[in-house]
Length: 122
Image (cartoon, rainbow, N blue to C red):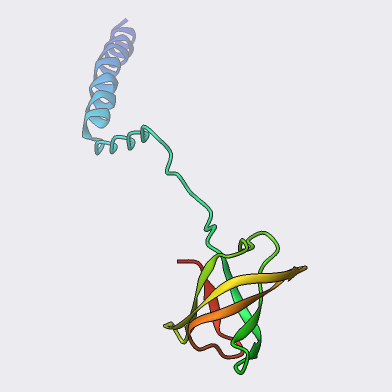
C-alpha cells in the first residue's frame, strides 16, 4: 500500500507542477507586435496621361516639325507643346496637322527643334 500512496502522490504533485511550468512558459514569451492598422483608403494610383512624343522630322526653313506619339496619348489640334533636348526646354510647337496614324505636324512657334527632341504637354 505504501507503494500505491507514493504513485498517487507523485501523480497529484506532477499535475500542479506541470500547470505551473506551462503557465510560466506562456507568460515568458516575448510579446507579439500588434498588426498594422489597415489604412482607411487604399492609395490612389493615377496613370500618367501627359502628351509626350518625339520629333521625327524637322524643316527649319519653314519652321515645322513632324512628331510621333504613342497611340493612347495623342495631342489635340492647336495644342501647344514644349520641346525638350537633354532635359532643357528649347522651344514650343503648336499642333497644326495633318495627323496621320501616330504622327502629327506642327509649327515651331518659339525656339528651335532637332531630330529626336522630346515634345510634351506641360
